[in-house]
Image (cartoon, protein in one colour):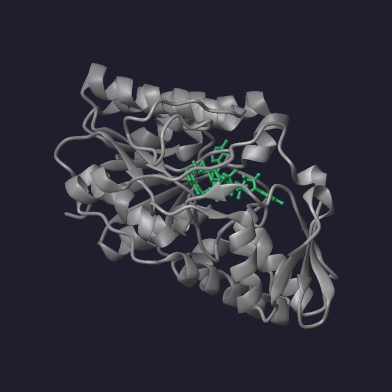
Length: 344
Ligand code: NAP
Ligand code: G4F
């Protein structure tokens, strides 16, 4: 008999890729969404699986709602991907972020404990928990030092996941995932912001784009590779915490340079600090400026993870490299800017 998976946050980037992966494996996939005026299925439609997923309304802030859904659909596995996932916004909405990203996870874990403690649970933890890093590369044993309300809420959820595993014997795993991107990434995140806005510049829909801290470094992988690791965690005999990462750090500046090249610009950087600009060598046009409004109140300068444990214990490997990832995102946004078809 096929297994049932409940994916919270199915409308997001990872939700879409995970739903496709599980459907290919023969799962019945139930996707929960918080209710807004309309169903947000654009990413699932892009992957051609919109009609293959069963949808249910579920908001992580409402415990009775969470319990009824878990009771009704009897999932074998729950993948908790729902979150207020934007670090920048967490400074403005710290309490909401704590409610959804922190307490929301306890609501799910309590539902599992009360309804059926055999349900396997995946928690979408994050490299933001390392924050002001105490060791490089970061591993499952690196001390945590989060530097924003998002990372702090996620750290609470990580420890609750660990605690329910140890206290109640629930097969609960915490995936400590470093940044992962794709053409389905939200446009407010820096990678997609760069590829979508530089494509708009290329097609004459805007003159230039603005960024914040371009020297920040992140470990960027492909979301499609990372969802397979989530599944592997729940299939392993022993539950635990696993880092998924590429092991390579690149700066926002590097990402912009490679994306620009893919879109036909040859960027040279001139000036310093807020006056720095990315100029297209061929036309001498400024296509990237710095705008301090995109600076964060406190910075996480550099994150880079070691995926060794996941590689050794789960047999997980990532397939897509940095240049290939940036190229795919830039080409997808080039096409969307050309057609002005902005689906998501
Ligand atoms: P995303 O695209 O922002 O998707 C987040 C999802 O959560 C959306 O479907 C959103 O629904 C849903 N959501 C937000 N608030 C909710 C609430 N109160 N109740 C129910 N659903 C709610 O994020 P993603 O990039 O796919 O990431 C998936 C998960 O992994 C998140 O938990 C994120 O924090 C974590 N993570 C991501 C990365 C990364 O680099 N992508 C790295 C580490 C960890 P709407 O469609 O209604 O907004
Ligand atoms: O793309 P970002 O907004 O992602 P961030 O903050 O690293 O968070 C993402 O990855 C986490 C995993 O480490 C996830 F848990 C989280 O849910 C999310 O998916 O910013 C990346 C870097 C930051 O240092 C930021 O300061 O880019 C820098 N940046 C520079 N200019 C900018 C901009 N970020 C954004 N969003 N917009 C800018 O204009």
